[in-house]
Amino acid sequence: QVQLVESGGGLVQAGGSLRLSCAHSGRTFNNVAMGWFRQAPGKEREFVAAISWSGGSTRYADSVKGRFTISRVNAGNTVYLQMDSLKPEDTAVYYCAARYGTTSSQRYEYNYWGQGTQVTVAS
Image (cartoon, rainbow, N blue to C red):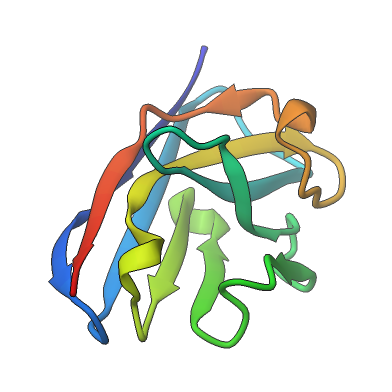
C-alpha cells in the first residue's frame, strides 16, 4: 500500500508564499516521478509541476513558471512545492501524485494520489 499525504496548505494574501509538502509511505518508491496538480471549484484538475526521480528534470505549467519551484528529498520520501508571488487564481485544492518512469503533465498517467490540501489566496 502506498500513501501520499499533502500538508502546508492554508490562507495567504496575494503576493505571499506557501510551501506544500508531500510525504509518501508504504512500499519503497524507486524510479518514481512526482507531480503536483490542482483543482479549483468547477474546473478540471490541472497540471502544476513535476519532478523526476533524480530531481534532475522538472517541468511546470506556464501559469506557474517562475513563481513555483518543485523539489524532492528522496532520503526523506518528501516532495515540496514552493509557491511564491501567489495570485488569487492559484486558489485550489492541490494534489500530490506519483508515477513510475519519467515526468508527465498528464493526470491519467499517475498511479497514486494524495487527498489534497486547500490553498486559498485572498486578494
